[in-house]
Length: 587
Ligand SMILES: CC(C)=CCC/C(C)=C/COP(=O)(O)OP(=O)(O)O
Ligand SMILES: [Mg+2]
Image (cartoon, rainbow, N blue to C red):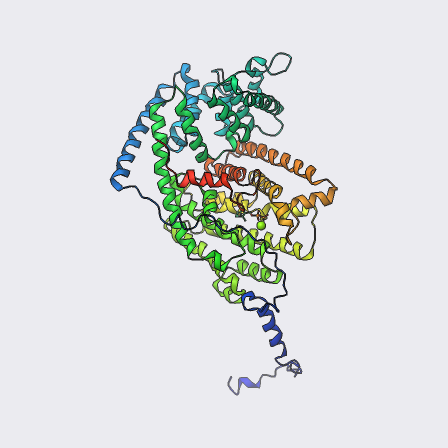
């Protein structure tokens, strides 16, 4: 300032200086030390961490490399596939006459169950629209249950009144159907497309389940082929099956049927094989990416589950067009697993506060404030965004990642809320718990993850819709949370862990654990009915998005139905992974 300007008289107060000097620097250094566990001596490390001792990864490095098909062989296979597709298209065309409508439905069902529905998306849409336009709700071409299931699967809200055809005048189910295995199976499968309040379908489920149960115990009645089908259906109906796993079982079953279409069978096998090559390539690419993080060394407390995460992502979508999204989803799942275990199987409250704030701020500048062991996982989170942004900006859709980040922040916020309850030893009321646990189950965040990169069908509106937590998404989160807690809560409570929904309900209502679990099984069933309803009434939501929600729910059926197969990878999941990603389809 010039001497002139200096004439200004400032209202100076001459406040006394700080009296504390630098003495608190030392304390803040101590706080910093607490945040860096690897530099702490055993003495200093008085902190008791909620360690879980999760089993290690069982797969080793086997997916790093894979057997590739020679280019000439691949080209030749693709050529045959095109020819076979052409032939199947001709079959469609022949079935449009009225007398063949039931066969048209059977063709659609076989194609879908053989796992090659994505080859004939247009033909299937056209065929079902044709049947709907011709009959509306008044289908009279036989195979009622098959018609009902296929229509509802595709989003046509046909009435369940047609099921009265299975009943006598006195309202009981006709006994003449009871010995018809195929009809019983079809009716049973149709009941899983019911929406809340469809009593006739609930009764049909009770009726068919009892009959099929008896048939399964009496293999003399029919051939072996159906016996296996019945047992599989009783364990898991078609509505809840992952399409790729269904193809593995259905292809040999279809082959055994005398009436099978040879071109279709061959196409299903070749299609499976070609797609398996792509999946192997993706997993190999992911394995290389993951290996660089050296999870066993850097995150020994966490579940190292890349292969299982890939299985998860592949369950959500297996089609070639979603390759980039599938990879992004698998990466996000693998990182989310480390985060989940950091929040509830290693981190202490003060450290988690810092990590939560860093994720909220989303900047490399936050790296310095993090405890040493968290730095890498934080960088992994930032890189998920950076890597996907590169791909998304090619299509001018990089801004979709803003929604993804918003969802991630909400998800991490719910982990922090649980960490707080854990620290306080507080058991929330079921209501308080649900508001957090439906987000912490991860399914809202993962659904939003799965939409990134799916193509033009997904718009800003799709993300806004999902972020607003509509009933369809809420139902899938409900199912995920309760099914997960039913099988994981015992093991979790052996360490210092936030109360799961089971403990919250036991405490609030003074119910026995068994009773709470029965209640949750019913909640899971009604969440399926809610998803069915929403998938029929959400007309503004594109079908490919709805199918992601359904497939996420189907993955839960595999990973959490009877036990926690994600944490403890037993024979059944190993078998699935091998048949999808290692073994070749038998010719
Ligand atoms: C759905 C997500 C996020 C998948 C990633 C893997 C994961 C965290 C699974 C659930 O683990 P958990 O049984 O420990 O879940 P929680 O800690 O929420 O009970
Ligand atoms: Mg957990």
